[in-house]
Image 1 (cartoon, rainbow, N blue to C red):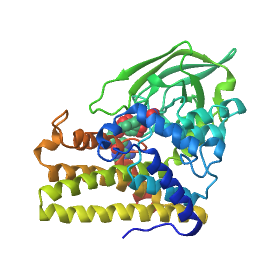
Image 2 (image 1 turned 120 degrees about the vertical axis):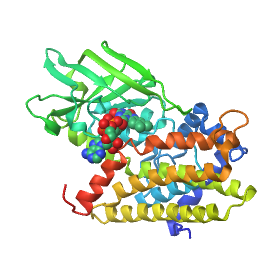
Image 3 (image 1 turned 180 degrees about the horizontal axis):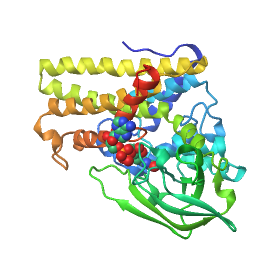
Length: 381
Ligand SMILES: Cc1cc2nc3c(=O)[nH]c(=O)nc-3n(C[C@H](O)[C@H](O)[C@H](O)COP(=O)(O)OP(=O)(O)OC[C@H]3O[C@@H](n4cnc5c(N)ncnc54)[C@H](O)[C@@H]3O)c2cc1C
């Protein structure tokens, strides 16, 4: 079963899909494993999709869009996912940073949005700290008022792409008396400011997700570097992250669909009835993810609470992991190989490794289960 858009939405989707098909190289589907690791190619895709107005379809043309309705945007993104569109090299740019700047930024801060969305500059997100991950409100990086602005001290960790970023949106504690989320303030830090140092963290896998630690030692920022109000950083964090709700499950759907394609290909060569049944079940999972995403959008558009977000995050990330595991079992032992003799250019093992991160970032699976249990099902804490 495949749901499809109708009417004007269908026409816009067709236009978008035709663009994507014409932009992708002729050998894209044959060499997708190589293309998925090609950062230059993926950056070129981001800029081209922006210029053509298909990167953020519901935004205006000046920000990479077509001023499309939200529903049309979702269909376009879903269709792109079904075509295994290239993964953006720095998804946080358009997904979190740009919405944060648009919603809370000063005129000067907003002047960076175009370049962030198009991928011309990368910005990183400084939330997690060694002692503050799931429990972000326990962050300890401080920003103290001093002559000339604020003095920042502390450490961030798991800061994706910090080494290649020009700026960081950094969450700090500005009111030491206020514990938890009330005393948090966001700042925009140019990464070349004195006192900022970055150390890359080596990780398993071959993706380009460059993890870093960011150290802040007496970093002096003017008050104009504040993003949003003083002590209002919690709202900045929560609202910015909420923009990536659709991005995360659609991104995982791309992974899931790809893993199912690889599974189907392997099963044609090495038939296995039990695994074929699993494949069909997972195809149904992929469809139910799409349907749940559409239902969530329906709730949002009609002003009802969107209960689907934590369900989609949990289900899509875990389904993608299961799908790569299925692809590995369908392909055989050599699925774990990397290098020239690896089947599908090592895509399966890389997919399995990269998929582990997806159940951690944006709120771990355990945290999503807590939210579903407590907020949606009303279970006791
Ligand atoms: C690919 C990737 C990219 C990332 N990029 C960024 C980035 O750009 N910027 C940034 O700031 N951070 C980033 N992170 C960090 C990410 O936000 C944190 O890893 C995440 O919030 C979890 O925090 P933690 O690692 O400190 O684990 P912890 O919070 O210490 O959790 C450890 C374990 O305990 C469990 N746990 C924690 N609290 C509870 C609870 N209340 N109930 C049940 N179980 C619980 C967790 O599920 C987990 O299994 C990234 C992470 C990944 C994997």
